[in-house]
Length: 440
Image 1 (cartoon, rainbow, N blue to C red):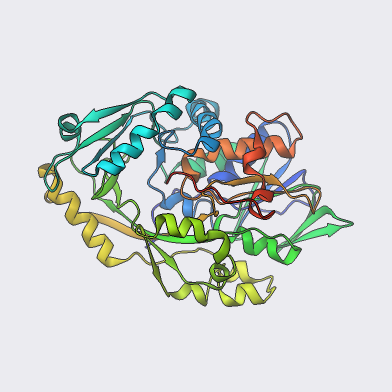
Image 2 (cartoon, rainbow, N blue to C red):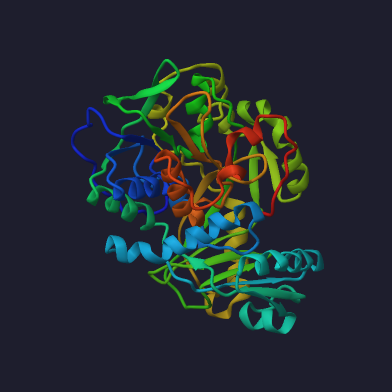
């Protein structure tokens, strides 16, 4: 079942023309719409389903700097600073709190990896410290394992997946943007190598700038226009408990990760227990993703599922240019894996005495769109003037969403960017450069 997210209304009429059209109503698209409209640009946000319906409402809700790829650090710091101010700017709570993140492990190799990141923390001023085994046990009980140590990332935290995207969208609308849900973008209108409009199921909007923030659908949306974007979607399983005792805010150990939500419930999952479904698009980009698959093969299981025959990576999506594909798939809503649901709740109940009788409220699956190096693409598209891409967030998109949207808005406005965008250019994935896989 889909996770709960606050639903908002759509604008009645599609505008004839705007400065910028944004394709995709997740955290990245709505953040970009907010920052562009705040600067006085006219914006139309298009979402084939409803805002936040896919990855952005299915996330754990973490907002972290800890253990990020150094290439992402300036963007991550920017995002945290933006999160700090959004509620006061918009006038509504997005659930953002700097609660700290607490980690524990019984694996010396994992502990060494965390410790090896400390020079990066020092370089970028991230307030994080290693924990002894006894200190880790004070935060997460040693019911199943004996902790070797842990980590406390002091200034990181969380936001509310059910609120963040709708609040950003309404903030953009208050600035003059229009929101169009149940309105799929079918194709771009390109004249002499320049964006001139977007064809939607409700009509055409004239524009000179388009941001593709379509998440797992981005590669398929761009492909008919000759744009090569290596992308793979990894399937994950998440559950939400009913409101229960408070045992901590944001917790991680090998058996589970948990985030406390505003209503007193927890979102819970197991880090690394993801499934990579064999798909036509996956076969096409197997060479680009091979370094990442090799590095993370123990954490990711391979399977054959429905994704080969339906959705953005299917055989039909690869071999045809059906411009109605997106409205035929309003919401990408994979089923959760029941064996993982059972394992997650068993681990949670067995770790905390206070949660021995905790009940499951809901469960869901999600497809997380990844790039070969696990770093997002935030980039203009050289082949088509006025076309921009912000996707491939690789499981980091919710926490860094405001920064990604802000950077994309600066690129569109041709403004000096707040962070160096060189690491995020699409060309790094397509020019034959060696793929460097960052931390998970």
